[in-house]
Length: 288
Image 1 (cartoon, helix red, strand yellow):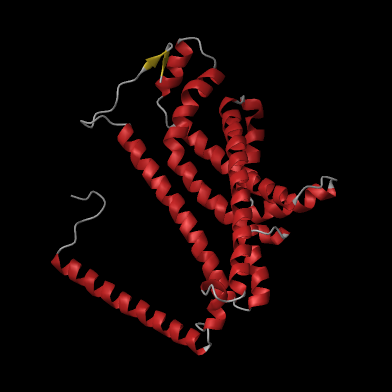
Image 2: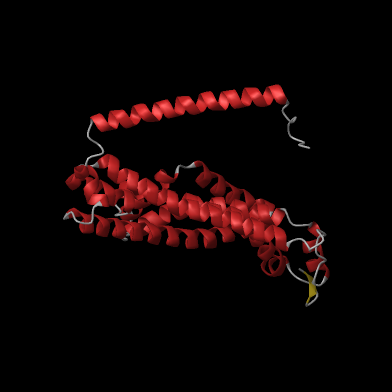
């Protein structure tokens, strides 16, 4: 029995089936019209798709070499941004948790300010403000700084929510055995918070990877920027950006499946075979 909605009866199921069939026919009709229009514009010719699908063409190895370099640049920026965002975000979360009331407003203000800014603004600001201050860095560094400024505060809120979701007895037990607030966070609460929020953290990787495409505004040679350069020669923007979209979809789908797998594994590990919650384990005087 569902607790969210009533189970549909025979007439409701019939209406749902009819509505689904009508919607399917409409979508199929729109898809046929789009394909026919593209065919009229010669978008399915070998000349358009050859550089991407036909290894016998002269452009094929050069195009995929450039796509490979763009993908490497995208993954490099995403990996660096993820590492720095995790470090800075964790520090922000811990600072907000342990901060005294008289300066907590400063931490909260920084977090809310960066959360409210579009990531494209932080990237553009890093690429323009730092050189104006005499700090000249590679384009990759500007992109990573911009991504880190935005995603670190998101991760900070994820980590803070993970710590807040833990039972209060964890911190109380740590204080009872003489641990400081910092020791309690470092040894007991943060490890559990990361485990609880790991699926959300992995899902954030998808956001970071997609946001690397904004590097084109500072001329960073990531995958989207590389595709734009290739299109200037091959004259097949629809086909090229379709391939780029497929690459992003495959990578992001793999990350999403990884998050789902981790969440299922963690859900199983938090319960015993009979479905009961595991008993607390006492190690070195602390409840884990």
